[in-house]
Amino acid sequence: MNSNLTTERPTFVTHLECAMMGDRYEADRLHNLSKAGKPLLVRYDLPGVKKALTKDALKQRPDGLWKWRELLPVRKAADIVSLGEDATSLIRMPKLEKKLGGGEIIIKDEGRLPTGSFKARGLVMAVSMAKALGVKHMAMPTNGNAGAALAAYASRCGIRTTIFCPEDTPEINLSEIALEGAHVYRVNGLIDDCGKLVGQGKEATGWFDTSTLKEPYRIEGKKTMGLELAEQFGWDVPDVIFYPTGGGTGLIGMWKAFAELEAIGFIGPKRPRMVAVQAEGCAPMVRAWEKGEEHAPRFENAHTIASGIRVPRAVGDFLILRAVRASGGFAIAVSDEAIQAAVDEVAREEGFLMCPEGGATYAAYKAALADGRVTKTERAVLFNCATGLKYPMPKVTATLDRTKPIDFTRL
Image (tube, rainbow, N blue to C red):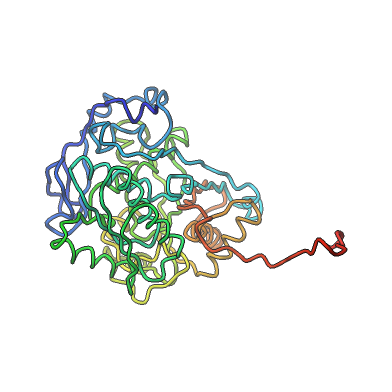
């Protein structure tokens, strides 16, 4: 049995805090947004963590998300709901590096997590905390992968789930969500329209609204990407991170992780430049970043093949934009054609199958290398947020008739 899941560890959560106003909220109680309608951030006694946790102690533990217990909100081992959240691989792309004449291209492959996407990180934490706090029914809007992760973890611990998807959500995502035990519905609208239904049904059903950033713990799960990355880099950080950005929980979470790691003495003040990657058909963050604004109005008529980043309006817009600016990064949009070409190129050249959202990060990296926003000496980490196996692939039409002569020289 994995000792990360069974050993009791000291816990250090002190309170929750409104990300906009800074006012305090009590830990160990159910919360959605703050009084100001903004996300709540979990705060820790970091001097306490610094005394309790050493790099050597961490090294002795099995790899995976739950090795970071001192920096996570789940207090009791019995409340952990796990499907085996291992650390995800960093994979170099040497042929693409050579082809582009750039620096290191490293893909962090989140498709290896349970339910095949990085949504497992956030939802394992949200569900474990929901279990700890006595939640019986959870609801959320999803473009696919988050719903699958919620359904899987909630079913594992007996929590009921109701999930709303835009009507054009890929069939494979809907089937996966349903198979994993959720009540799932197609809705004639986008993800924020689905989110409105979750809010509207709250009073009548008593379900807990698990929408992105409307509960405090998905950020804590997603921040493990930053914790893990720093350890994998030998307690250093890459020069630049390209992150596919819809709701932006992971970008916000990683930025929080680096601050906490510095506070406990594990890394220094160096930070990666955070790059928010969006699709041209849904780029609210890019517009706001370019205008120098802190909030991003709803992006109307949003459309892209990268459905995971088709989020017309993000609750944590100001947190995404603050992290991007504070890090000296930028927000960039790429076309669907560039996304598809990127997926094809990485698969053909390196044998690595990216999801469309992951493909967007490679397309953005190429564009940024070409216009000088990334230099040819920098180490870049690109997030592949889900397995490419969940997405449409080219049809194969070539056939052979084994009963007739075959000219093998033409195959």
